[in-house]
Amino acid sequence: MNFIKSKRLATKVHTAFTLLLAIAVLQSCGITKYDFSISPVVPAAEGSVKVKQDKNSNYNIDLNVKHLAAPARLSPAKEMYIVWMETEQNGVKNIGQLKIPSGMFSITPSSSLKTVATFKPTSFFITAEDNANVQYPDGRTVLSTGLRQQ
Image 1: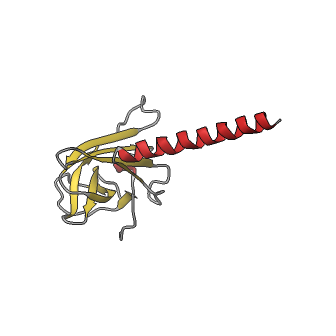
Image 2: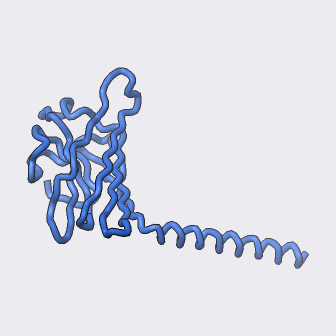
């Protein structure tokens, strides 16, 4: 009977150690994940951003969203979505346009954006805009990874 209890304890200790080791390995990869909050503008939309610092101290950004309605369906209608990055040192930066696929074969509309930044991001947000070359957010914020005044 004691042998069975010892074996169970050893199995639990081994499982706990393996789990802690896996967590340590994942955290050592240096990947930071930001999840978008539920949006009152587009409630079905969901997504996240993964950021990883490379050996040159640049930040590789990988953004993915699903169920984001076409900007023309918003009220008021807009032309496009723009992704913004907030940084501690360099303020808010336009990091690109987010294309939303449309058509009858888009069962689950999803979109992604991959880019590189030289400044460390603190949060991300997506606005609906009429112009891709905007330098400052002018349109309505539709998704955000942090608290942001609209």
